[in-house]
Image (cartoon, rainbow, N blue to C red; front, side, top):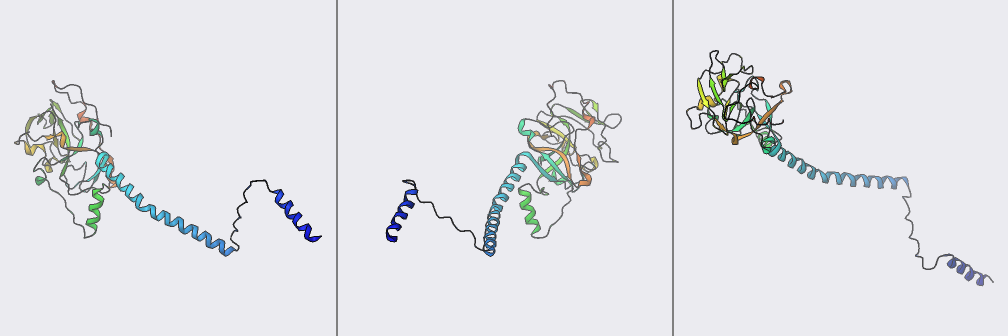
Amino acid sequence: MGSRGRPRAAARTLAAAPAGAAAAPPVPAGPATRAERRRLARRVRRRRRTRRVGEIPLLVAVALLIALVLKTFLVQAFVIPSGSMEQTIRIGDRVLVDKLTPWFGARPERGDVVVFKDPGGWLQAENHHVTSDPVGVKQVKQVLTFIGLLPSADEQDLIKRVVAIGGDTVACCDAKGRVTVNGTPLDEPYVHPGNTPSDIRFTVRVPEGRLFVMGDHRANSADSRFHLDEKFHGTISEEGVLGRAVVIAWPFSHWSRLEEPAAFRSVAEPARRGRRRPRPVA
């Protein structure tokens, strides 16, 4: 009797399962002990740390690429190696230069402080303050300078203030010793204390597409006045301008924006010059 009961029990069990249904997968057993659970948690944490460490080179590469793009197209830091713009900008100051607006057709205006490529021989007359770094530090600085995270101290660039633009007539000096632009005398509070507006007398009609530039430290700036006997009477090409200096970023104690001085807002436009060009946006 018992032998015949067992087959009937098996039949009832098989009948309970739906026809064609697959067998349920076995449920894996969890960690049997607290020690096993701890070991599993440690393995998970190690995998996460390894994944984060593997992402660091990619993040660094992306950051360097962004910095390089910013330097090339948007903004770049420059270190000031000479005192030609004192007291506005001092030796060792770091300035940020807007390189974006020229891409949209903005051109330098009177009063702008601009960084430009050496037109040829200008740097030889500038008194540069040079510092030397120990081996190792110098190479690191060169890499950071290349990607724009540090300003360059040895690029062939100069920084001056635009006094007159294409079509203007700039002269020195009037009866009160002031520089005039299109007959309008300039009140220049930014000129280095103790300096005259200019010890050199001149009258220059600025060609279109060129700029007449001067340093704020007039007694220590080999600017347009020192190249009057050259082809374009000391003016520089607008195409050589790298950008407009917009802010002194370092040191923090000397932080300030570089805005258009009020002296240039009342300058009359030359008769044959059209509407005033739109100001670049900082």
